[in-house]
Every structure is written in C-alpha cells, then in structure tokens.
Length: 113
Length: 110
Image (cartoon, rainbow over all chains, first blue to last red; front, side, top):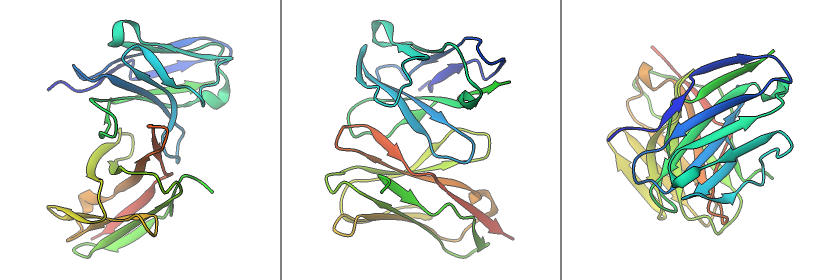
C-alpha cells in the first residue's frame, strides 16, 4: 500500500511571498488532515476534510492560509503572504474512517526568512 | 487546561529498563487514543491505538487506558537505543478530530 505522498520536502521563501504544498492521501482514505508542527511542539490541526468537504478549519488562519481538496483525493495548502512564524513542518495525514489512526506523509519543512 | 497534556521530558532511561510515558486528557467523551513515535526530522508513525479501558500489548509496547482517571500511558519494555525519540499522545476529540499533546522526549542511555 502506497503511503501518503507530500511535496515538496523542503521550501525556503522570504516573508510576504506565497507557497503551496501538495498532498496525495492513501488510496480510498476519505479523511485528510493538514497539521502544522513547530519545532519542539506537537502537531496542530489546521484543517480536516471528509471527501471534498471541510469538517473543521477552526484553527486555520484564514486571512493567509487556504486549502482545497478537489474531487475528494489530492489536496493543496497555500500560504499567502507568509510570515516568519509560519516556519514549521506541514504534515498531511489521512485515515479511512472516523476514530481510525492517522497515516502521515513525510511532511514539508518550510523556512520563512 | 490543554486537551492533551504530556511531560516534555527529556526522560532518560537505561538500556534494558522499562520506559513509562504518561498522558492526561480533558473531555470525558474521548473514545480513541493513540501513541505515535517521532524520530528527529521525521514524521510521526503509529505505535499503538487503544479504545477500551485496560491494557493492550504489542511486542515490547503496552498501552494502558483509564477513562475514569482520564489518563493513558505507554510502557516500553527492554528499552533499546532505537527507542530514543519523541512520543506523541493523541486522542479523538468530541468534534471528531485528533488532538496531540506536545510530546515527551525519551532518551535511552546505553
């Protein structure tokens, strides 16, 4: 079974620039999550999709972050404009049903200078 | 109070000993709990899931859940240097999203 795929692995941008991350979940997994993990902290949920609908985006800074999941499969997370405090690892995860464990991708490490 | 609380550590345990990691949570309605291991620079990987009160064993790992006291723990027997990592405790909230603690750094000393 192929795992969760994410790209790019690393990204360095200057503040006020924009950036986009891509995620392809495990085939058949209806639920997709984007987490932000700042160094030394646990993952913080940004947005959760069920198929192509948003279940929870209460902690997504909507003035600068946006996410979509077209056709209920791939997802993109965008930041525009980026701030220094956005420097973190962005983790995508998927699960096949409610209450099931998450499977994480390798993450994208973002550095904002 | 945070939804999931863990001692950040580091927790230092001699090789071959038992490592005990603890996690407390709010929200008595939580039903599903997970332990993830995260090596430095890597993404979290699932070690154990537990849904019922009591113990669940898988090889050298035992997860314990006590819903009345609102805590979940992970025991690692015969600790190995390769067990050195950050251990994340996670639970499904009543809103059907997984919330993680800040993680406990475990160091196994030879």
